[in-house]
Length: 129
Image 1 (spheres, rainbow, N blue to C red):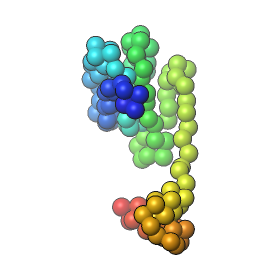
Image 2 (cartoon, helix red, strand yellow):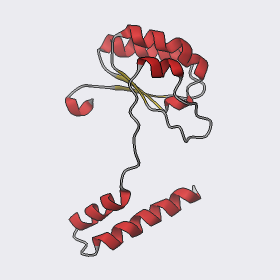
Image 3 (tube, rainbow, N blue to C red):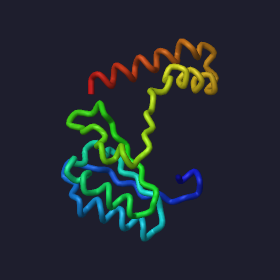
């Protein structure tokens, strides 16, 4: 939304988020007339979602939620959210191609080889974290 010239309120969810806290974020975004994004929404307790969907629907503002299904302790997209929302599944970007293009723009002649090595390095780092 920022790219479209709209300020956006972004909230990083946790497993301790209460209905009152989440509803307060909706009210604040509504008062500011800004879209609201619940980041890491998979961490919000499912009982909060059951009550929150109605409040979100009544607010009349754009609300986005990011659910990372592969995260430990995460919940699937609640059925109530599926019923009122539009689902957009993301794919893993082609990191090898992205790194290859970036290396090429930086002047590396062997950008394809360097791109694949950068990806291998980051994947190794991710496994170790």
